[in-house]
Length: 108
Image (cartoon, rainbow, N blue to C red; front, side, top):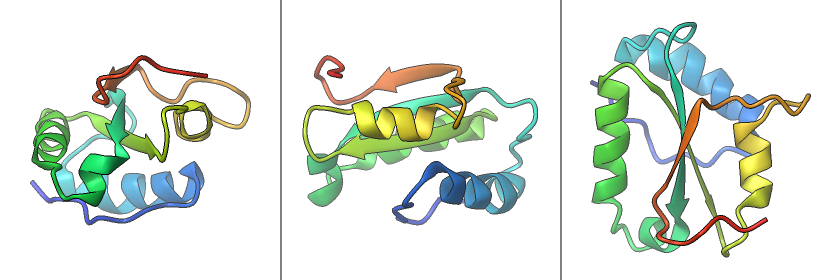
């Protein structure tokens, strides 16, 4: 199972272009039928490289055939990244479910 590189995408179009066309085929993920799981991460864990639990969960979900959309924010308000990556331009949800790994309630 391939491991995604540490890339920060400017918008969901860039992410899904790479994820659906490059990563998913190599990982054996069926883009059309796979459930899509949004994951909210805490930026401090990423910055300090204390992210093994994130990598493990994402790898496990993808290994089971799910598409994963991880997001993070610099603060506690995740409304911007949530709207940008978990919804399309028409306001329709892109993800089937969300896992919040921040330990905080969603704000916004």
